[in-house]
Image 1: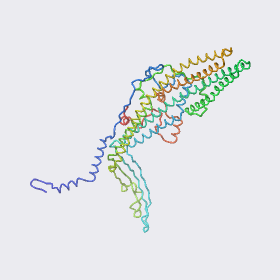
Image 2 (image 1 turned 90 degrees about the vertical axis):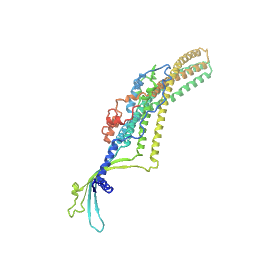
Image 3 (image 1 turned 30 degrees about the horizontal axis):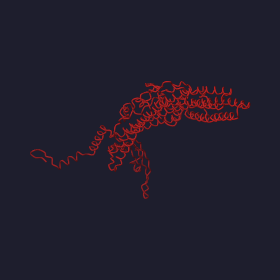
Image 4 (image 1 turned 45 degrees about the vertical axis):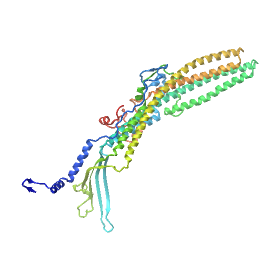
Length: 543
C-alpha cells in the first residue's frame, strides 16, 4: 500500500513476504549450515583421564640386608647373573617357542585390527553400492509383465558432535597398549618360570647325587656291621639298624626321580616341545646355578614403569575412562548427513518405446536425495543415565584395582628380597653343619671299627649327614629360585622383546595365507593404525 509517506508493509504483507523467503531449498541450506557449524565446534563429553594416586614406599626396607644394595641397573637379561649358558639357551628357546606367549602376541594384532574398526567410525559409517533387478506382474486380469532395474549409491555419516567416536579411538588405543602390556607380563612370568624350573631340576639332580653318595656310605656301614656281627663283636641289632637307615635313604630316590621327571616335563611345555625332548638341552654339569653375591635393587618409583602388570592395570583404566563419555554421548541428539544417488529404469512402456532398461544411465533415470537429520532418544526412562553410572562404577573399580596392584607389587618385592637374604643366611649355616656332620661320620666309623662306640653313634651321625646334606642342597636351590622371584617381582625380563618380532614366522605365514592383513603384520615396532596427528590428539595422556 502506498501513502504519502511511501510504501507501508502491513502484517499481511509481512507474512506473505516471509512465506516467499522460506523456500525448501533455503531451509535445506540452513540445516546444512547448522549441522556443519556444530560439527566444526564439536565437543567431547565425559571425563578426561587423570592418573590415579597409589601409595609408594620411599625406599625398600630390605636394601640394607647383606647381599642387597640400592641402585639403578638393567633387568632386561637378569638371568645372566647366574652365568649359566644352558639357562641362557633355555630362556631364548622359550621366548621363541612358548605357545602361551604366542597367543598373547597374536592378541596384539587382534587389538590392532579392532582399533582400525573404531577409527573407521570417524568417517561415513554407511557406504553401500545398491543394485536391483526385478520382474513384475501387475494382476491376474492384465497380461502385463515388466522389468525394473535400479543402480545407486547410499551413504550416511553420523557426525561426532559429542566426541563419541573419538572416545572410542582413545579406548581402542588403550586396548592395544593393554595387549602389549599383557604380552610383556606373560614374558616376565615365562622367563622367571623357565629359570625357576631349571634351578629346581638342577637341585633335584644334585639331591639325587647326594642320596646316591649316602647310599654308598651306608652300604659300607652295613658291610662293616655285618662283619662285626659275624665275628661276634656286636649283636644283630647293629645290622638291623644299618639296614633300616639304608632302606630309608634308598626310598628317597624314587620320590626325587618322580619330582625330577615332572619338573623336566614342565620345562618342556614352557619351551613348547614334547615331554622328554630336553635331554640334549640339559646336558651339562649337575650344578645348581650360583646366585650373584650382590643384587642391585632399584627404587620403588621405577617399579610403576617397569612392571607390566602395573602398566596393564593403567591401560585398563585408560580403556574404561572413554567408555563413560561414549555412554554420555547418547544423552544428546545424534546428528547425521545422508545421501542417495542412483538410476532407475523400467520397460513397463516398452511397447510404446517410451521406456527401456537401456535407458538406465540417461538423465531421465537419475534420482537423488540428500540432507541432514538428527535422532534423539528422549524417552529413555533413565536407561542411558544408568548406563553412564555402570561405566563410571567399572572405572572406579579399575582405579581401586590399580592401587591394589601397586600395593601387591611392592609386597612381592619385599617378600622376595627377605626370602632371598634369609635363605642365603640359612645356606651359610647349613654349609657349616654339613662339614661338621661329615667329620662326625668319619670319627664315629673309626671309633666303631675300634670298638670304642656302639653302632647307635654311627647311625645318628650318618642320619644327620644325610639330612643336613639334603637340606643344604635344597636350600641352595631355594637361594636361586628366591633370586628369580626377586627379579620377577622387580618386573625384569620383558625387555628382550624390544626390537624383535612379536609373531613367529609360522604364525605370520599362516595368517597371511588366510587373510589379507595389509601392513598390520609388518615386523616393525608396533604402532597404531591412526596417523601421527590423530595419535597425538587421541592417545591417552602419558602418565
